[in-house]
Amino acid sequence: MKFSRIFLNRLQNPPKNRDSVVVIDVLRSFTTAAVALDRGAAAIHAVEAVAAAAALAARLDGALSIGAVGGGDPVTGFDFGNSPASLLAADLAGRPVVLSTAAGVRGLQRFGDARRLYAASLVCARATAAAILADGADEVCFVITGEWVDRDGDEDIACADYIEALLCGRTPDPADYARRVRESDFGRRFGQPGWPNLPGADLELCADADRFDFAMPVRRRDGLLVIG
Image (cartoon, rainbow, N blue to C red):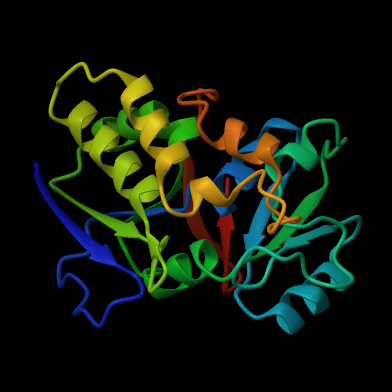
């Protein structure tokens, strides 16, 4: 199995052979998505533009809107911000979710034509590796979405390192990667007074490696990208 990496916020040429692409957003898009699925969401529609996401949520019966702008502030008028901890007690059973975020969802949109596309975070890393192996992937491209001019993105790099180690048949200690999530540039902002929309509870949840036993494949339905 061959591996490559793309950093979403750098000027890079995408891989020509889009066999299996894993878009990673640990803090917090795809941790939020995993919690939503665990809470019973029927499907998660990944829509990049806020206005388009709001319009889709208005059209879908019983839909909930979840989203944040760059930096993590919630989208005004949405049902939830991009906060996985806020969903832990939510009843999403059977309800569609529309997710709009500045990094993870944008990454999915860029690689929507891959043969196999996954949304991934540390909470479902082992399950993601298992799904890739079961699918018989020849090449895997990891898309790192969390690296910005003021952020090292190591929370996503750690997740990619962990999944790659599992795919190579190694037995890595998940605690090492959880520590990197907490100590990343962005991770250190959570729970701090200057970042009211980055609660410490989100960070602890995002660093809970392999909390869920399901992967999050992404498929195109009626022209939209759907997680789960």
